[in-house]
Length: 228
Length: 302
Image (cartoon, rainbow over all chains, first blue to last red; front, top):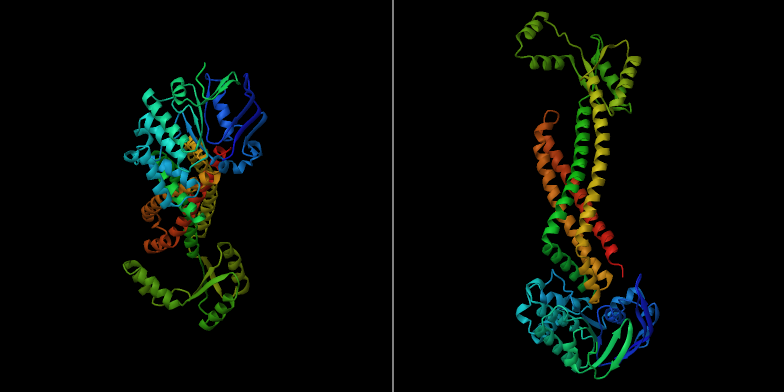
């Protein structure tokens, strides 16, 4: 599995202070890294650069040997298949059922129907969603939705899971549940990058913590604690 | 792999068409209205042309010959005239058959039949009934007859109200021009409205497209189902439009009956409605697919 590497990354937005400044960061395969900091500290910006949804103004982001700015636009969707993504707002397709939402990610990569049926059923069972398979996202609770989105992120067995505030819309119990799932996924070898400002789940994990403040890395500890 | 993706795209488009039912109903309604305008403009144009050619077919001139011209001579003239390029049909009506026809059509009129008895002999003339290929050639044809057979001709008669027919011709031609202009304007408006309806329906799903890209779908993979969805819009809308056109056309039969007999009208409808149907179907598919393709491009920028 390739290593994720940030090299002197700088990124600014119009009419704003620079969102990221002088970021140097290496994430090894199989690591569990929490990126923490206040809102606006640059967590999301940093996470997006990994799966090439955003690009640095200066510096480079590498996934393995190749930096993200070298990827041809047309090939970006294929690059993104290396990553499973989970978001605060779940990003489920509202017109698709739970099963179809998870299956869609597998269809996209061209798996055949038999394989999809088998894999999706299996992962829904693991995540306790079997009974919800034919429900639509708006018929689910927040915790269930996030589990669906996590199932979708995992269906193609990506190298890396990037979770951007996955517990932002969840109650503490559901947050813990999601966090346990992320840890379990990590324990099976998948790299997890978690961007969050939820100190409870970060402290529970007892994993590496990178703290961002004002676009700069102010601490990087392994195992670490939520500082700010 | 390709076949699988295509199958998925067809299904995906269909599922999306069905589940976004409100948007689909709205879009299909707008599109079927457009197609109705396109189809009926076309059909009215075709009917007007059919009507005109039917009227034109009834135009002819009768050339009456003096009583001393023999039947052989008239046949000779007939053969000469028949060679002319503008002639569509020459018919010989002998004195006797003319009388026969005349008395038959006046059988209930006692005054006429008494008058005929009174005269004792056949008062009518033998004639040639000439039909030209085009309405504009009658003037020329009657000139020709007058110049060449002046001695033998008693008189030349424009059979059925040439002036009226000419005026009608002008009216129909003007109507066709106006119809075409109005039709084109309507069609353009209809296409624009449909285009924006489809665009709206895709706009509401802009977020979905972002999600699809995020889970690794290529632009093409997102685009193709939407194109099929556009096709479904076109398919359903054109079916609705065709049904409406057929029903209204059928209801219009009595109106045209005065000029064209009902049987002939039905034959015309059967012979032409399917042509309109095909045009409507293809326009529907074209508008649906083109609108989807153009709209989605806007929302698929990386």
